[in-house]
Amino acid sequence: MRKTVAIVGRPNVGKSALFNRLAGMNISIVHDLAGVTRDRITAECRRGPQVFNIMDTGGIGANTEDILTEQVQVEAAIALDVADLLLFVVDVTAGITPIDQSLAQMLRKTNKHVILVANKSDSDKRRLGSGEFSKIGFGNAAEVSAVHGYGIDDLVDSIVDKLELTEEETEEARDERLSARPLKLAIVGRPNAGKSSLVNAVFGQERAIVSDIPGTTRDSLDVHCTYNGKHYQLIDTAGIRKQAKVEDAVEIFSIQRSYAAIKRADLCLLVIDCATGAKMQDRKIAQMIVEERKPCILVMNKFDLFHPHAQQKDRLEELAETMRREFFFLSYAPLVATSAKNNENVGKLFVQIEKVRKGAQGRIGTGVLNRLMHETIENTPGPLGRSPQTFKLLYVTQVNETEDVSIPVPHFVMFANRAAKMTDGYLRFLESVIRKEWPAPGVPFRMSVRGKQ
Ligand code: GDP
Image 1: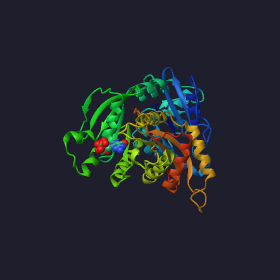
Image 2 (image 1 turned 45 degrees about the horizontal axis):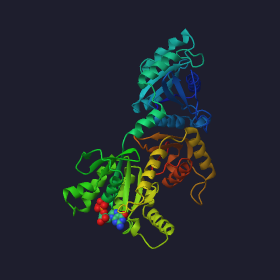
Image 3 (image 1 turned 90 degrees about the vertical axis):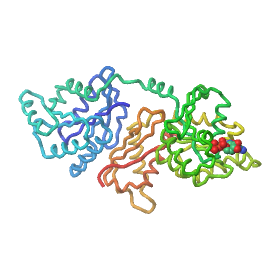
Image 4 (image 1 turned 135 degrees about the horizontal axis):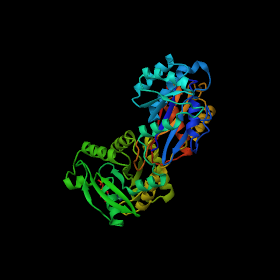
């Protein structure tokens, strides 16, 4: 994942000028530029094979003066969350100001790398003043003049050093590397739902067992297989039970086994016996999947036993409706009806698995995301009967919590003033709006708010 450098500092120290200078270096594909509260948020800074993103926090919070401290706090919050490195910009002509000092304190708390930048070091005379800034506690300041270009090369050297940037892997290379990895599928569900039958159906169709490796804990068996030429690692929680002959294992063991499997999985296949319908234990397992924020597909197994004499289409609709109701808290999971015993629709299940993997790649651009959220909030007043929102959205960004996994799970962080007014219900509504733009089936979205209460 590309590293991000945030430019922070009090107003008027030249953050935007520095941003422009860095973005304008060799470059630059300045993507996602049309932000909302301003026309510049992030840009790509590329030097040879080394690339990083820069984020200008300067204009967030618009131009009103009374927002100053709030703005500084929001900047710190953003920096805290998304940046790998902070450029703390001070003005060499102004000396250390109280705002610089309190900002320094906040930045220290982030425990992030900080490069202190003494901007406006246009002349030797001015540069004499930069020594004073070492008192602020981030070592000697890098002397730059954003407007004249002085010191910029050295600054970029330090950034590249601090970020320990290596040549960036292209997106294609990364996709190729990740899709070459076996996708870890946890097959979970209560006893008798048909998990073993499903695993057998997979192997029945393409007998390509590579190896049987006992899971790290003795909670599950891992079996490797290929299906349609793709590599999978099945975390089979049913197999061990059969092996250990603890057929009457109490529910609690089954739940614990499921938990361990879910934690290790890239994608969970929650197998439900649709002949008996969803039971408490199914819901408990589903709850664990949600809590662990795992991608998921609901496998409605034993479809052959579900109202077998009704019309196929009606049956499917009815079943889907019932499942959606039972698992309303798992609404991101696509549904697939299978009949493992008769080996029906197992192929369809794997098509869906690949859809989930594919749909999770990429991301919604920062500019698009910000525009979408601001427009939505503007056009959709608060909950019924209430006045329009009392919160003010400043900026929204997507961070992927788990990097370098086959199915990344996105986290959308909203920075807002009066953040507490943004209720969970409203966040769910915003999530549904994002999903229209970028569906990512099977993948849970995490939504959260930061900022002043
Ligand atoms: P597990 O405990 O989840 O591994 O469940 P099993 O795979 O052992 O299946 C439990 C029982 O349900 C067995 O008797 C299977 O033959 C039966 N079964 C599994 N899948 C299906 C299915 O799709 N349709 C029908 N009719 N029976 C099934």
